[in-house]
Image 1 (tube, rainbow, N blue to C red):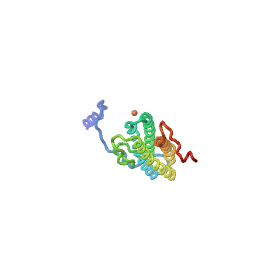
Image 2 (cartoon, helix red, strand yellow):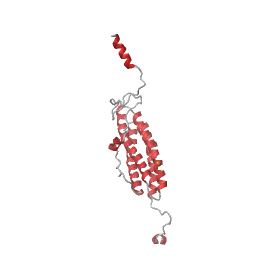
Image 3 (cartoon, rainbow, N blue to C red):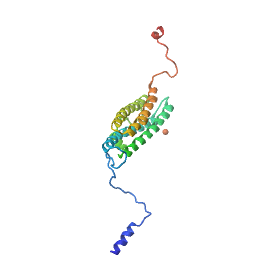
Length: 208
Ligand SMILES: [Fe+2]
């Protein structure tokens, strides 16, 4: 008996050796919410919100990456300004990704994180690996914004309906407003105005 106690004490001794290659079961499965958070929000509300926010998170991560792709691969006379603008928008989307993911965790859920999971979940069309022309880059980005803005509006209304005011506030004041502003900045680049020589007034407009 005494011998046994000695051997168990030996195994509990603190060691300076790092313990590599460890694996264990998950402490919380994806798609669940933890029970005991004092948020005054019922579990079904937190379940529904975290599920919807994960869709938004996957789409926002995809748009974030589409901005970096565009930043790297842009070509042509507007290279410099678009290179900078795409990176600015990328940085703002990075912040949104963090806010959405942390909102999911705060509500007791599990935020989607890794690229393969994001790829399986996103509703945004996959672009080719190669480079595309500026108007196509801009159009892809705008289409992605449109998907996100549509779901944000729906989710914000639903959050307010079921009493999750914090999520509603995040969606409207942060996610929606940022996306709307970025849409404006992109869209103005697709207005076909002359760069150097103004258009001659047409015969009909000068006669009027
Ligand atoms: Fe860069």
